[in-house]
Amino acid sequence: MLIKNGRVFTSRNSFEELDIRLEQDILEIGSIEGPPDIDAQGCYVIPGLIDVHTHGAAGCDAGDGSAEGLAAMSRYYAQNGVTTFCAATMTHKEEKLERALRAIGEFERPENGSHCAGVYLEGPFLSFEKRGAHAAEYLLAPDIELFERLNRASGNKVKIVAVAPELPRAAGFIKHVSQSCRVSIAHTTADYDTAMRAINLGASQVTHLFNGMNGFLHREPGPAGAALDGGIDVELICDGFHIHPSVVRGVFAMFKDRVLMISDSLKWAGLPDGSYELDGRPVTVKGGRAALPDGTLAGSCISLLQALQNVVAWGIPLEQAVASATILPARAIGIDNSFGSIEVGKRADLLILDSRLSLVKTVIDGRVVEPVHL
Image (cartoon, rainbow, N blue to C red; front, side, top):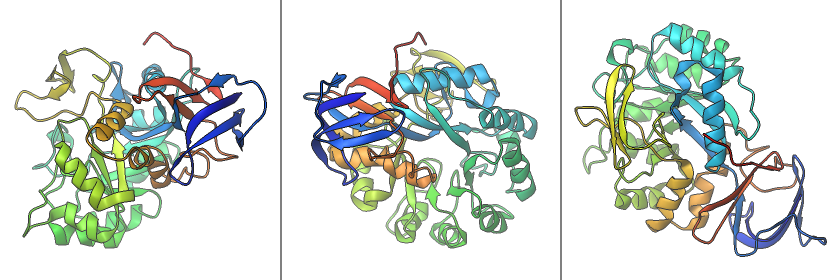
């Protein structure tokens, strides 16, 4: 396939008018002779988006352990510009988590679907006080042996595990587990000093910054201040409900190339407003905002492409926004040798967006994703 005349987002984090020849991988970038298969005149050509924190979409939940559900999620992501994702689980009992991780580990990309890079184990090692929408009855102190059992069930595909570092045994857990996957500070009552200790022990990112944790105050900077001083990555939900646009602008200004945009979407992403349930608890989606009866936000309803469109509308430079949804998450989970940027030899996963950042085409493994009924 030959894509011509597009404004291509290069590995230099800039847009240049270039042509791309590709098969399953990218073969050539430059000024290429020949008739185009896709004329991208007036369009942006960017790497496929990488959502490292998504629980579900299109009525399906990664925690259900369903191969069919994962395939439906994969197709939804591809239809919405996400070419690679980490399937995130919530807090459940061990048997359900093991079943879910085994299904994720055995997942194979369906036709017209996106790649699954592995597992984001968001629970159960979280704080009761800051649990958010996680089920209180299944929360546990960090447990190395439980983590190892779950990781084995996934085929050692856990990419990120979330931990509240103030919990008993958290220090030893972080030090041990950070040797095999990313540890993310999450759903926590930790103060600045506790979060800094976690970073020094091996924690390397913060789960959905500001949500499920103490705030960033002038005398109590909390996990956000520790992340800034500790030089680690931060996830950001950019749906307009979890974080005010002014704070989004501040985070991009402070953290620069350490912002990982995520959707944190749950199964109502892609579905209309209405009444749903989360592990037996009612959830109401209204105006794109999902919440439990007490008002607690229950994940998001957006795609990562919507997040990208939002932050650009809020004043973030397009180049910075694209990097935060492509190469930076690819580096975070260690797949940047093959994914996350448009370079010769890398996988031919890319998007064509119009001047308004609306999706024109998704290309995965060098093939245009065909529209499917979700």
